[in-house]
Image 1: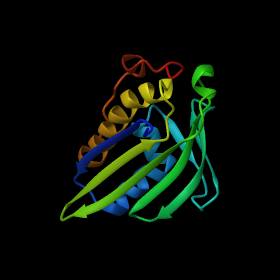
Image 2: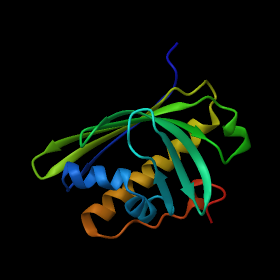
Image 3: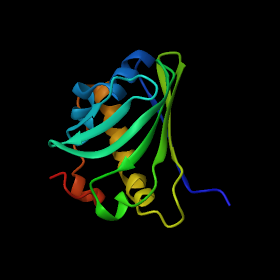
Length: 155
């Protein structure tokens, strides 16, 4: 039986290089990802940490780097006690240029049946990636209140 997976596709008027920077630079992520810093040296096997308001919320390991086409890492939620018990999952970003736009495909896979994390990321990723798209296209991120997504601890 296949494990549940989350997939999201969007098209962004930007370059692959600018989108890559927005996915891997804390200066960008803090603007569209609930003030979250993404910390890593971006080498295969390196640790990854998502840090919000000084607190590590998620950790992982870099699995694949193909700048500016593909980024993959493991994802382990640390903030919520219930989700912390779940196994690490995998996040993959694929960037494909289409003229003046870039197709961004985000997948998040490896969830167990009944995963609380799958429910959480199914609300979070669309909001985060919509805000990213808005930031790159207009210069202003969408301000989606975390509480509206059922995300605790980000107020």
